[in-house]
Image (cartoon, rainbow, N blue to C red; front, side, top):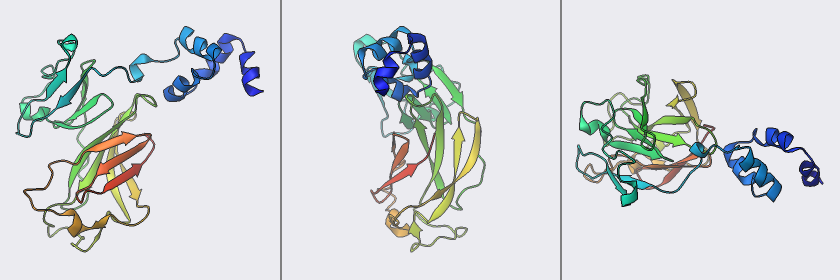
Length: 246
């Protein structure tokens, strides 16, 4: 009955209602019926710049450092995307090292967030110094253009190869701890903030489980952002899931 009633609405009223939906839900509403599909298309409610389009190519990095990013694409894309990222304001090519990526955005070593398709880029402000003592951080990018044009950058603590004298942790300490604070940058507010993470369930292991011989220790842990949750590859090959609202 609700669908029948909605079909009786004038197109302008229905368009006003549908445009309040998030892009992903709006795209799904096109499949409800032909009249809804026509309204979404005729009123141009979907922003194509916020929706995933066809794959243009793949950026990849060689293991040597420093090394410029490489871009693998079909000849038809040649020249449309500047693979060398030479339009960026950076003085050392090592700063172009890709630290993370998410749904078309690149996060570079020099704290740059880049959209290589549009050549738009910004430099993040310096994060606050607070963090876990003697722990370095991995920078992770979370971005879902079907939900919001804004992104977040998370600084996730990485267990060091050897614990220092300043930390309260020992090799027998659980990891991750029951709760801890991370630093998060939001493009919506353009500020860094502290966010408390509370562990759900058992720990992935102890600090000692996360430590590995230096020769095998990965330089960076990679992540996948999917449906509002960030999946992180941990140092003992477990997967940690962070749930948050971008």
